[in-house]
Length: 162
Length: 162
Image (cartoon, rainbow over all chains, first blue to last red; front, side, top):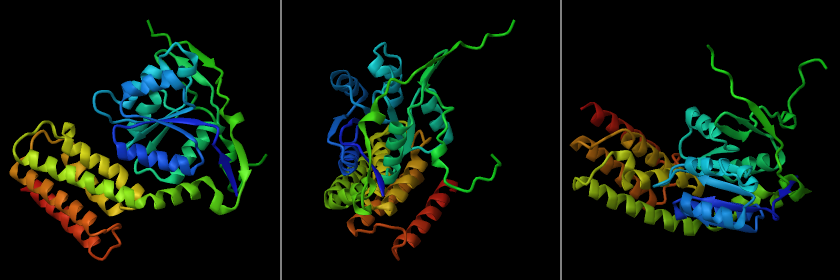
């Protein structure tokens, strides 16, 4: 079976819940990830991001004081290229479409609904890594181009004539 | 006069993540998802202990609410504790606990203060979560869990109408 070797990538897990951070760390370790940093708030996350430039940020939306969306705004609004294009996956306990839309409107690469499973987390990470969408800047928006297509994902019958 | 649409600029994604991961062919038990699920199962005892701590915090916060220390319910530590349990329980194999925590969150969300009926809903949900955790009731397929949750739903509906 095909699987991704993610051992060379570094992650930052941002969540105010120590349990959730541990859960994420356990899953990432299972994926073979060796480098996982943790932050318990948006402010701590920014410090960690500037210091170590993780490859992917997994960020909880609902945190006291500053939300994950506020952190995402700071990342996408940064003048530093390494931050501005940094992949961010927003994790949330809310599954409403309006929430997903809001996260995308703020430039999230992907949205992951809790409870998190190994399969759901892996699929978001795999898509983040394998589908390198260009970024769009339009007015106040800066984020990954949502018009990307991943034709490899469809494995059903081809019904249209070629 | 019409508003001009914002200028759209496309930025090439500078990501090099794709080059830093390898797709490898492995037996099923070596895939990333399989290994992560195994890691989670191995850490299960630790997570169950943490969940017990969370349930204790939930019960303490419910007591504070009963003493009249309330704020908009979605801002309270009680809501936060229930929300965290909701987000984590299913990931560690306690779908039943997550289900009841969601019932509690759904009820608390939007409440500004709790009436006597509201307090009894909180009390009942917290008791149920505590019992499920204590008795290791993990899924709604458990012979007691399903009927218990159905009874709880009816209880909540009745108390909300009353």
